[in-house]
Image 1 (cartoon, rainbow, N blue to C red):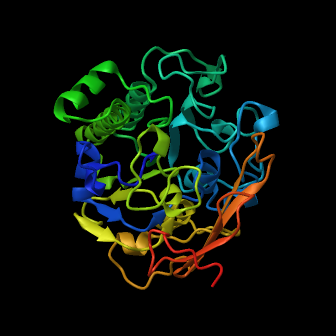
Image 2 (image 1 turned 120 degrees about the vertical axis):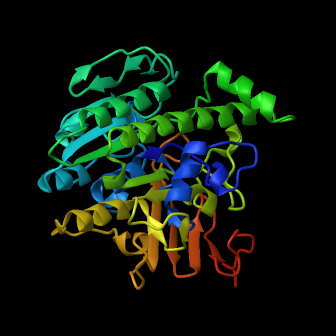
Length: 390
């Protein structure tokens, strides 16, 4: 499960005081929380490219956001890149995807061409409205290769379709792999009205801006809970590994909470890159456990490859985090992590921002026009003392 623009501290199991996320809190109680997990980029498409390929995003052609406007689109997924759903297919799995794709609008880079047997969701980047599902007036909602125009809030639709997929797989002789990618809580911050009313009634003094974002996250959590309920009611819970994460940090100017880390979405500071990540596998992952293992989005593919017993034979950048999931010690973690973001608005004109973490040290350039900064994350985890001039 990948959500969109969730602040690392915007779940109650990660410290939020004005937000209730019972489904994901239960996931954390029954599974393992990661306290040192990184998205591969502080914006959408590159992280998704890393999830789907196990590689650094620029290596597979996606250093920036893929958009419907070609003039302002800064990525094109390499059609030859080997993908996670293709790996799962080779291992004998049925593969499904629900929700936001954001890795290509046209052939050959649509979900069904990248290894998904079954796709129902949104091809584009963001929706201009959660209820009409358009982007710049164009409908990008598809069921496999057929355009559809469903009614309802996108979060509810994606939750419903994920439940449908889980129910379809009850009693199946083949194992299944589902990638569920929500648009929420990405802008526009547009929760159903009754969820805002509930939040404001409970959280006295909360600002309108924060109440709307909290409501959007809580509404999404309720949908995720329905998916978990379907897995349990169909008798598949004990055989199902669930991994939850976000594509980048939260958007500060719409009320997201990434504290105590510095900054948020679009930023190379820790608040833009650190994400809440939880995994549950009954009887295999210790309930209520926490790990400080340093992980990254691109590690999902090698982790699932190790689980399926189908080793990856091509070059890959991710490292499996299966051993720490299962409580084993000694697993190699990333000594170095590199982050890049290419952007194309009028100011940036396709220039990049970058960061490199090596051990406890981190160097970054948070704007192509800014000087390079340097921090020691062991001594200064919140990036308050720039050591570049030292």
